[in-house]
Amino acid sequence: MTSIDVQELTKEYGTTRAVDRLTFRVEPGRVTGFLGPNGAGKSTTMRLVLGLDRPTSGTVTVGGHAYAALEEPLRHVGALLDAQAAHGSRTARDHLRALAASNRLPETRVDQVLEEAGLASVARRRVRTYSLGMRQRLGIAAALLGDPQVVLLDEPSNGLDPEGIIWIRELLRRLAREGRTVLVSSHLMNETASFADHLVVLGRGRLLADMAMREFVQARVDPRVRVRTTDGAALRDLLARHGYDAVESESESEGEGEGGDGAEGGRERWIVHHARVDDIGRLASDAGLPILELAAEEGTLEQAYLDLTATEAEFAAQPAAPSPTQPQEA
Image (tube, helix red, strand yellow):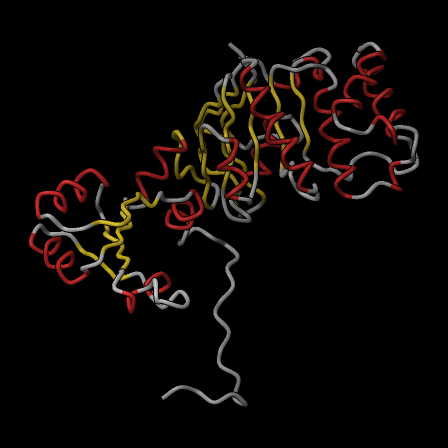
């Protein structure tokens, strides 16, 4: 089994501890999202995995071996840490040919990954003429060059257009289906939610979470139910008697056009916190209360992530103070 195993990993720079006794495993057959605020230690950890830096203490192995001990490492591990790494004076094809030669990979593989990354038509252009999105594609092509069992990507969606984002999303899913070990660092929560099966979350160098993405969201965002009815007062009283907190949804209950499909038209929408659809539906049915809409409001990865890391961000913007030239509310 080709997994990434991190054991009591610590990295200090002078008096700063960038990584603090991390222990986790990245398993094959799934995409693991690697999350955390700026300065959390994600990039440092990935550099330690790839032998680009030495740990102060602890170990990190790939398939049971330190990266530095791997022969022809591109055949085992593919990585993208910096899309600007390719020399600007080389063509994309020559950049990949040099990598292939150093790892005794066939030149035919170069053309295959260029095609897969959508760069075949511009393969003989110099890298310095590439946009950020094209450089990202080239970096991903380099990571795939050796057909590795382990893939590490740092912000792979950065600079990609919508088509490119869909491409990388499908690529990550395919790699996981093929049984590969995939670790992806990202700050884009909605995008991570679209491809990740599992999450490892860091904060100030420490491990905050290591669990399936669905479990992570469900554990940190309370379940809610959206209800629309013709009798909001009866619904509120019914729910209150059974211990539920219902709040009228203002954005939905205001007038929605001619004829008033909002609260003024006799139809009110409510959000019921800490509730399940089955439970609310059963109560309404037993009470004979007319229900026009009943739906679960799923928690998002962004909500769960922000809840967990609210006190862990090293760099956080503060609300702007009111301008002295602007009138302040009483």
